Image 1 (cartoon, helix red, strand yellow):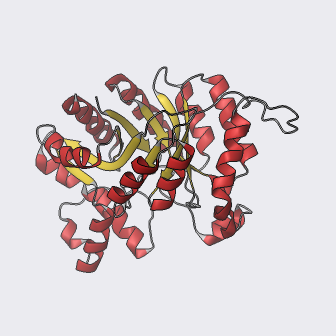
Image 2 (cartoon, helix red, strand yellow):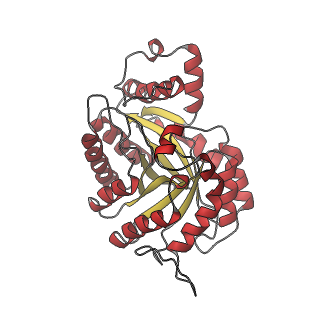
Image 3 (cartoon, helix red, strand yellow):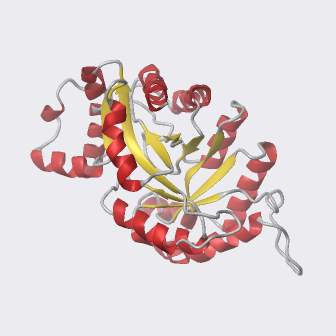
Length: 326
């Protein structure tokens, strides 16, 4: 059976504060747990007014501490921003506090702008060491080796499951080479999806963590009681991606009645391209809309993002999706 999971950025909606976003993240995770979702992942982004999950490991602890069974993790940690040692200690601590519930998805992009990268005391060349950093992190989270001088405590021998995240062919090749599960970021960059998944499966080499390829596909899905309401709620991510095109993201905006009055034809084309793996509809129609993506990719799991401004409507969307997908 296809697994469903939640990707959350602890969205800060217009008119709300970071404290509201973090409280909503935990509330959503509790509803997702009750609805049968497999994972609840938070993503690392910096210097963005509409996202409260910058201190991702702290947010994961907040959510894991307020839930009981759902897996909680990073989707992902942008490893070029950190030393592997620090991440091993952070996620080793989380895995010690919440055994068998923590995931660690790893991305190669910095997830921020150059000014913020400098503030993080990292340079653009950090991403060049991503494969070596993944191996170092994996070793720090694994069993101790003879004559090892550096130990992550907690962290050592917690064997936190690693995932490679990506929106290009590089991540697919690395995940295949290392025998790790692969999550494709088609919720914002769907262009290379099919080629990346094909390369990953073709080149996959079994590892101690994983015997066979495992593919998670990111998508945006907005579900409501009616088609019209889902279409209206979906204008929030449409505005959000248009603002990305404009270079002015801001906080998560409320929906509008007519999105055509918000974007220009060029902005519509660019935003819609990024939203190519996005779906909206009622509980009666959303499954049929998602099935072609699931069948085309052979996805083992869907990681669903839903940038909905109204928190109760967002919770309702995830509940309806879980019900209709069975």
